[in-house]
Each structure stands twice: as structure tokens, then as C-alpha cells.
Length: 252
Ligand SMILES: [Zn+2]
Image (tube, rainbow, N blue to C red; front, side, top):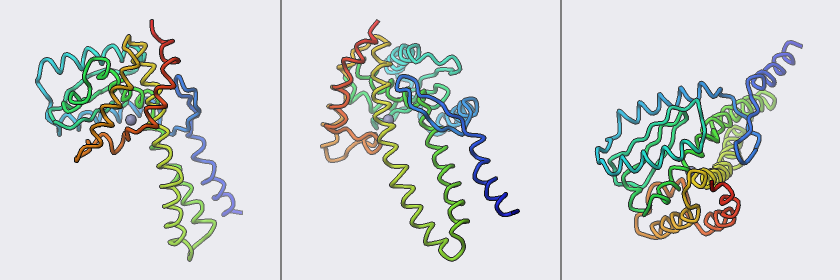
């Protein structure tokens, strides 16, 4: 009895803390075990760490551009609990990210790929989309749930198969749940990013050009780091093209 009770407690306790959120624009149900307040706090903490570690560019033109484009995207994103700030990192790699809470970092190297304001808006809007879609918190919750699932199964299957099961489950959790999801997150951020940039007054068709530039760069000898997490391929570009008519409805 005691064991059964314990088992049930382990099974249902985490669920109490899970909140069912809905993604903006795409209206997908998410399981998130972190409150938006805690998520923003974590974002600020991470931003402080980035600012300590990374060289911040003093280039006036680049800072002006990133702030100008960024503020327009931020306005379209409409997140009253975010304190938006934009930084240019003085590194030649094409990369960018947005932390929960609205701290946006753009690496100088992105200007080799983004050839105009609309293309810069493409990157910033994509990163802002990841943040407002709460992808970080969702992924974190998935890892936590994976951990709980693993413990549960280990308990029910028991001792001697434990380590073998651990290995199998670990692989399953990695390839079966975590990896396909991140592609899904990418596409979702592409879609919402496209709406945000259009709402901000930028031309969504420039997003296609931006990813085509990316694709061209990936054929080079040393593909940029951004591409390992953001594969630029025909499939991605086709999906974006198909979304253009829907995005154009957000033009104001
Ligand atoms: Zn992304």
C-alpha cells in the first residue's frame, strides 16, 4: 500500500506544477513547468553572464541599426513584462539570440549575411519569436519530464535491468523526443518571426533572401556556427515561401 501510494505520488506530483500554455499565433498547447516570472528572472541572470563574457561592440552604426530594428520588432511582439535591450557582440560569427525577458544579442558577423534592414529584422524577429513562444522553458520542462519518466520506469522495471534500460531510454529520449522537437521549434520561430517582422513594417519576402544567403554561406568551407542550430535548406525556404501570403495580412 505504502509503495503504491508513493508510486502514485511520484506519478502525479509533477503534474500539479505543469501549466498548459498556448503559443501566440500558432495556438499550440505547451507543457511548461516554469512560471513566466521565473523564466524572465533566469533570462536576466543569463544576460548578465553574457555581458560579462562577451565583448560588446561600440560601433555606433551597428548599435543604432540593431536597436532601431529591434525596437520595432519588440513593439510588434507586445510583451509588457519584458524589458527590451539590444546588444551587438563584437565577434565576427553570424549568430544572434534573445533571452526570455527581452535581452537581444546580435553578433557582428550577422551583417555579412543580412544585407539590409529587412534581413536584419528577419534574424531578430526569429530570435524574439523563440523567446515569446517560450521555447527555452518548454525544452527545459521536457528535459525535467524526461527525467521523471526515466525514474518512474526504472522503479517499475526495477534493479537489474536498470542500467541497460537507462541507456535505451536515454537514447530514446534524445532522438525520439528532444531532437525532432527542436526542428519543430525552428519552424515555429520562423513562422512567428515572419509575422512579427511584417507587423513591424518589414517585407517578409526579404526573409527568403536572408535564408538563401545563409544557404549560400553553408556551402562554403567553414559553415557558420548559426547553421548548426539553424539548418538553412530548401525545405526551410519552401516553408517560409508558403507562409508569405499569410504574413502579408499582418502588414499595417
Ligand atoms: Zn532558431
